[in-house]
Image (cartoon, rainbow, N blue to C red; front, side, top):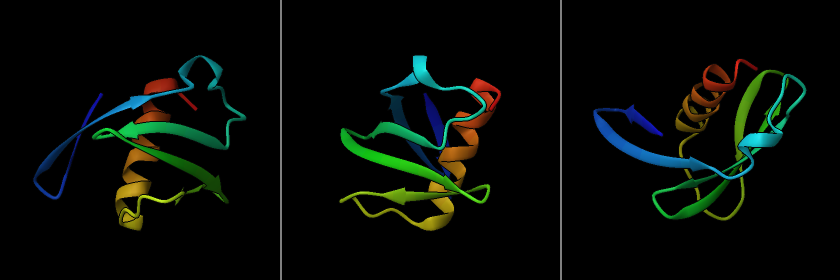
Length: 71
């Protein structure tokens, strides 16, 4: 999938897409070849893992996945 954040295009792939439902609180994605885990805590998506991304970007990624899978 693609997302544009601050006028820059990013490509990401959802690793566990088949397991995503309304109760999902953790999403694993591959962002530009790097694994990223996003966790939903109190309806705020935050990044969890080694690769550091901006908190607003993590929120944008989480929302993008949420819209795609109607979470």
